Image (cartoon, rainbow, N blue to C red):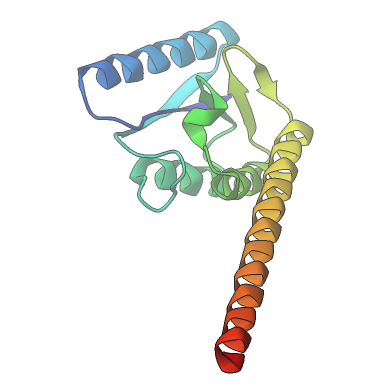
Length: 154
């Protein structure tokens, strides 16, 4: 199987360089253990896991997934791949359509069903936030209307 390794840190310093090397070593060891051929190592250093468009190596990884050049993506932890459910949902979609497995050294294969649960939980979280913001907006609008009525009567 053709494996791609993805590593990421959100800072750029000596400790993050060490962290990238540690992630890479863990993932390489897992590939070696399973007899997978590492066809690419993708690293985004000093970049947030909440973003997609600012992560050139992640973009390249997803492009290779979509082209069918990869059978398995190996990450030290799913949060290295994405910390934002929208980003994870987009990656999940590419993995799912291409039938590419997502694997971590600690968790093994992250099955599509589990990936879907993460996307659904993220969507539910977003809906809670949207509803909370809507309630706040409604409260502010009502308060403004009441204030204007008081001013008009005053």
